[in-house]
Amino acid sequence: YRWDFKTLCDYQGKVIGVHCNGYDISAMQEEKAKLLISDTLTNNVSDAVITTDTNFKIVSWNSVAEEHYEISAKDAIGRSFNEIVKYNQPTEEYEAMRASLMNNGAWEGVVSYFRKNGSEQFIWIRSTLLRDEQGAPLGFVGIGRDVTERKRSEREQQISSAILETTVDSVLATDLGHRIIFWNKTAERTFGITQEMAIGKRPYELLNFHMLDDGMDTPTVLANLEQNGQWS
Image (cartoon, rainbow, N blue to C red; front, side):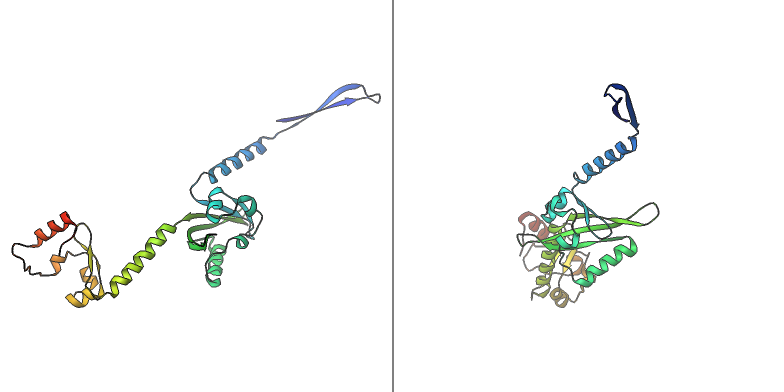
């Protein structure tokens, strides 16, 4: 309870009593505790957490969002999300994202934007429509995770694969169990074996090599390869 006290005086200003009002503030204190817990949680997670109203005006913006987007909570709260964050998406993709969010209540995907230093940042986002007890829309909550390193690695792999696919040499790669995980187009033409047929097989199961060096067989080649890191 919260108590308010006020002295009562007569017409001459003499104190004749005390007026006391008591207020039950249990619900208020409980709500403050919930807000404190919520604020503590959102600022101690590894993901960006952002909430907006139904017009995408920012209501909360945690510390990870500050780091990702290089905008402080003070500068973000109260402004339109679309005003301060510009994703590298065509207009039609952005509209499709918003339509999915409104119609399905959720949207998930990877978007990118440019940081102040010019580098491209990739963020995985999960956005959800929030509703009240009657089902009316209240706003949105978005969770964002930095996946820049993963996307860069994927791009590098795509570039490497494209180079290997266009080389005039036959190229194959295996895992540590000697099972084929990559078999380029030139290998298909050279050995007459498609990639679908080769993947998962061991080279010596597919190809009948004839070793020109005396005493050099498949087990010896594999042993030398594992020991020296190369063989030719």
